[in-house]
Image (cartoon, rainbow, N blue to C red; front, top):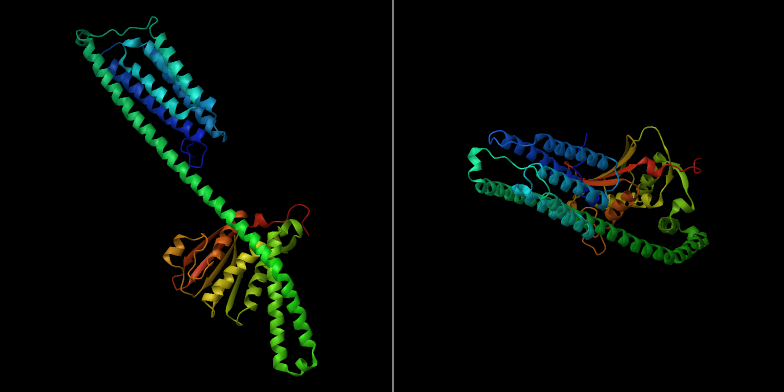
Length: 432
């Protein structure tokens, strides 16, 4: 079972602070038991063990309650942290009251509680800890249980007090260093998590701006493409062209190219308009992947694309235009660097579908592998390059999937796309 006191950097600050208090309290329990054993054993000083052990049991109970608080999964409030520290102050005051009161050199441990409160709590709650510590100090003047020193120490009680004060100082110093170091590490982890979150927000803003640009460009390209399509149709129907077989064949290829450009423009507009919400297309995962592979194969020489279907039983999905576009971009990039051979393998891994795209090109450089998923990271060296994998990573992330890249042992690159089928499953009312 996972220890709830070991929390990641992304955990809320209140939960991390409570986990830290739990760990410090366990140290306090261990230290108090050791102190009671040493003082009442080798040193031979008589202690009121019952009230001291009761306080330790209370601290243990507080720790178990705090662990239960962490296990519930929600955040820990400032009030809950304040209550935990107030219990610690009360327990320390109770133990000091039954072990000499203000004459006990460990009375300085109240300072540790005050410093912890100042670091973890809000200003008002921090002052509450200060007031509680002062109240405990005042209460220690009221009929404390005195320490009866045996002959070796009764002759010079100040020497024993100074030795205890030194041990107390050493304990406070060690705990504060350990505590502040841990807090500093938590802050660094939080800063790193915040930086990653800001980077993600910047990337998503970048995607939005690119989407707006692409949508605008698609709208602008729609009219000239339609004009070209009409003109090519008229030319193909012209008698002079009909008699020239070679020219007619060229026009047929031009018409196919224009039709593909129009399909790409339509795909961009569908992606920008949230195609799923406007015009969802029900299909299956096998049909979805096969259509992308067929479209990519149509743009290259026959036999240069190898498609391996290892999907197993077919599953109904809703076609996602953005996903179709970014997978097609990866296939086109692979064909560009490896025109003689590319391979697409589609398989199932439990609830995930995995699409692997391999080529025999130069592979990824070390810098590209390190900066994978960042915009403008490309080996092609042209302005604006490197957006294909960036868009792939972010589209998959939106769907709960991921992408991996690596270099093949036999040469070339491999892009692995991992996508949960649940992200593409038909919603209620969309089923065929």
